[in-house]
Each structure stands twice: as C-alpha cells, then as structure tokens.
Image (cartoon, rainbow, N blue to C red; front, side):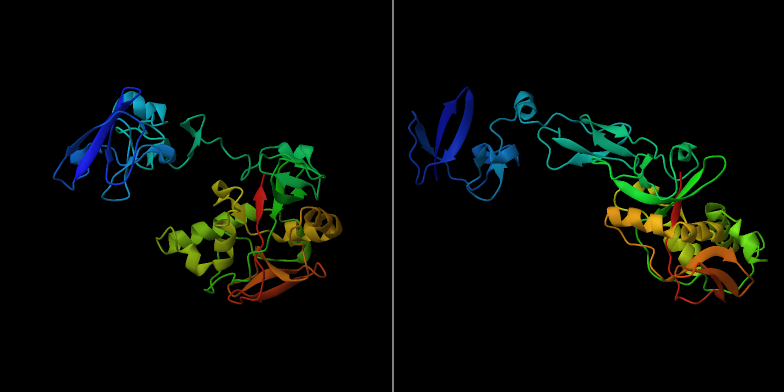
Length: 323
C-alpha cells in the first residue's frame, strides 16, 4: 500500500494515495500494512466529521492527539465529581464534549448543576396569589390567562384558608381499581355522611396513608402498585413537563372533587384555553373509604357520590398536586 504524507499548518496527516490528487508538495512511501494505527490514525472520532477517514473502515482520526487540538474542537470536560454520571459520546484524549449528569442534576452553564427544588408537591403558600380555575405553571405561578413562554402543569381547583392549594392534572389516567383487596384501613377515616366528606380536602394525606399502609402490611415498598392501583397511578404520575413531580400527585379527596363540580364551568374554560381534556361526565374515584369492601366515587356529570366496590375498575383516576 502506498500512502502520502503532507503538512498543513504544522499538523501532519497520512492519506491513502490510490486515487486522489492533491495540490501540495508530497512525498510517497509504500507501507505493507492494513492497520489504521500503524498509519497514524490515533483517535477514533472527530467533531463535525473533521479529520481523516481510516481507509480500512468508517472511523475518523483527529488531526492530532495533542491536548490543545481536542480542546479546540470542544473536548474539554472531565465529567467527574459531584453531580456527574459519565461523559457523553466518544472522548478525545480522555475529555468529552459534554457530560451526562447524575439524578437531581442537569447540564447547565457547561457543568452539571443541582436542579432547583420543584415548587410543586407541597404547600408553599403561593396559592394566595391564585384563584380557582387559574392555570398553574411549572414555576409555581398561576394566571387566568395563557402566558407565552410558560408551561401549564395543572388547573387550580382548591385553595385553603391558609393559602395551600391543590391543582388538577391536565389529563385523566384511565380507569383502575381502588383496591384489589377488601380490607378496612384503620388509619383512613371511613365515610359517615356526604356533608362530612365534602369537608375532607386531605387528598395527599389520604393517599400517603393508603400507600404507607400497603407497603407496611406486605413489607414491600412497591406493594401499593399491585394492591391499590388507583392510588398507584395517581402517586406515580409525572407529566413530561415535570418528571421530577413523580411521587407528589394524589388521588383527590371527596371535598376537592365536590369543589371541582362547583367550579366546573370555569375549570373547563381554562382547560379549553390550553387545549387540554375537560372534566367530562365520567365517574371518578375519590380517596375516601366507606368500609372494608367499598370506597366513594364522584359523578362528574352531577356532582353526586356513589359507594362502589373497591375492586371495580370502571372509575376514572385524575390526580391533583399540592402547591
């Protein structure tokens, strides 16, 4: 095999000379080899296709193995330390063009930075600046209007006297069983009357009680996924706009559902403005328990309630989140 070597800006290249003509001064020599490394192809990749292609494969060789050449093409990150998981892509001289960050961190300002804590999933008191049927955005602010540049995450459906709010997911998650087992959860208050249940706004407290009960009963942190499907779907929900909210959504209490019915027209108008799923006329599960065999459902069409077998899978799950 014959190869041609030439220099350009002080960098040396080795090229196959079988069928190319170059307008430069060259010197030729024949090498009996089919090994790329022997021909000087020391790096395995180059940014933007720059470099020289190995004549025996599809690999590209960087013009130089020197540190400053890798840096010139953007390979400057060690991708090590707190918050880093690994380098992204093929390295050049053990440096990367970008890094993959560990959970809880994000690639920002040319480094893995700790993600800011989500303003959603707990009471922040910010609901004092909101009203029922407002659009709740990912930054924890709310408005009756669609705000350009902000991402809607839910619709405000309840605000307590101490400015703690709950907001309804922008989509229903399907129909699931309240429970696959018939047991009375002693830590969860049983239904006594509709008036009492209308005053229950403890969506997330109820959800946590059920999940903790199941996991403790079966000594398994994922037992709730099998034994309490409706709670599981609500709790494990995470919209694509905020995956970090997984584990912060809750099955609504009956009081919250009743509040939704009282403000259904305004809530539907807000959902329509952002092209999301309206309340509709389905029957939804609440987080309220009636007895060992039954739980309370809510009729979106009339605002009334029903007492249904827990293992019925005809009722909708649509979660809420605190803020």
